[in-house]
Length: 271
Image (cartoon, rainbow, N blue to C red; front, side, top):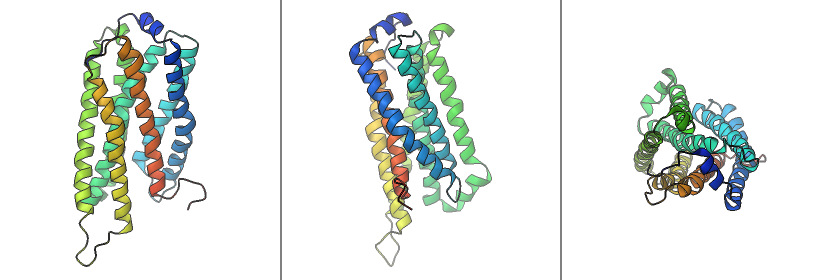
């Protein structure tokens, strides 16, 4: 990434204590926790009680729960003017930049195998591929976020961590684009005797399209902002980073809605 965060954390913190910044952070955190938390809880309940436990979406729910917890802690540190709020914000930035796209890309790959290579689909369970993918999200995102948050104390070049985060994000976007395009082509191939798709395939197409829109509106803009070279210092720390976190928070809310809608469980009255 191209932005340069000032080496003095207190200096950044002072600049990020303005009223506009406080309102922006407050709205972002309010949206994430108040709107996202009930949806994530509903997704977790649905995924656990499905016929086969949805490992990837269960892991995604726990991942976003930890994100929401950090946003609450961060907001209280901002309003109390605690010195560590910049560190938490930087941790959150790398955390959402890596984890969300990784989880969605693994979900896309799972559906890709189910649709395009159905004979290999049972092997995902045999070899615990879902569990390995879920674990890899934590193993990649958590150390990277910790290194980013404490880069000054550990005397690590922040730019190197940013480059890793950006590379992971772009790689996951490429995976999602490739798997979604391939699945859409396969799903649109109707049977020889009918032009209508099976309802399960129709739901799969809706899910694939929704994830593509989510990627286009949320994660690709985050990637573009991370490479925006003309904003440095204050603009990077107090504008681009919170905006990126907010877009990732929107994505964390939209995905559970799509997941629950495709299964008819968005509202408690639905069966």
